[in-house]
Length: 279
Ligand code: SF4
Image (tube, rainbow, N blue to C red; front, side, top):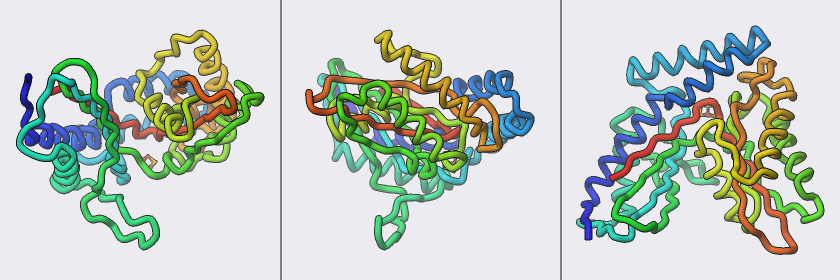
């Protein structure tokens, strides 16, 4: 059995969160460049140029892409042939996040829901972990801004509302958000499961590569048609008007109860910061 010390996991997480906050992933930069060609509005084009410049300055100067450096979200897959040694796995993850936000001069955004007292170190992180075959540990981190998370929602539709109900819900959420989730956005849609699994599916959908369509032809067509509809709303980059309101939309789905149609919409802002490592 392969042994992995908790310190290794802690150090990888520290690096990943700093990297995610300073270096916008290349695929997001490439998507902005494509969006520049597709955007017709002069104001919208100017915003995309500013976003590209902002990403370049952040990378070159080693500073955060955005002042909102997010809550720390992690998806971890642990190979069942792995033995984690030397301490508590969740504490190591928490310590990695704590060190990243301290050493990287990243804003600490975690607070008590009512007193609003800041926890001081951006912990606790939000951890989704699962056991998978093999002996590797895969860690994906996503610092998630509050502005876009605020325009995310779970809704229990009735089965008869079907795909049209899903379409109405997604478009309603994007319209309601307008400029507030910092477009151009990426939209994750989770369909099925139950109340909590559809929310998780919608976040997993956000992590799919740009341009990757669902393997299910029905869902693929739904992704394409909702994305087209969203981009006709005219919100545009940062809400200055234009065609590029959303860079992409992904749907993840799983079976649900015969009486239910759970749907979740999770919106991600232009600071689409995802980084991963495999140990
Ligand atoms: S929603 Fe995103 S881009 Fe907007 S302030 Fe928050 S992290 Fe920054």
